[in-house]
Structure formats: structure tokens, C-alpha cells
Length: 70
Image (tube, rainbow, N blue to C red; front, top):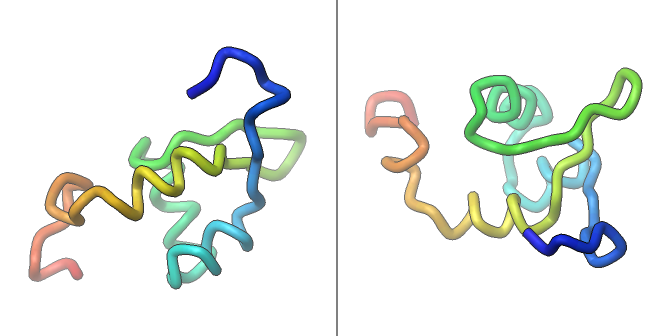
């Protein structure tokens, strides 16, 4: 991630879910398990866009999922 926060675009859980074509609950699970880094602002989470792009490009097997879980 860039060191300058002005270059970082943060996404809401709903935006991440739309990008990844999963439910919001799946995004929350990924955040809580550490598979997707996020920053908490009050009662909501924000996810760096670069982390979402990285998660999309990484095969599911590297996220701890198996074929039976998918």
C-alpha cells in the first residue's frame, strides 16, 4: 500500500461486496478472519481498494478455502 494516505481509496463493505460479487456477510467474515485488511471507522469498516484488487486476483485456495467450502 502507498505510504501517502491521500493516494488510498477506501471502500465500504457494500462496495466491496459488489466488486467481489459476494454478500456483505462474506466481506465481514473475510475482514474478521484477516483475509481482507480493513480499518474501522466508528461502527463501520473501510477496506483499501488495493486490498480488494489483491483479494480478487489471489486464488481462493490461498484464502484458506477449499473446494468443499466454495
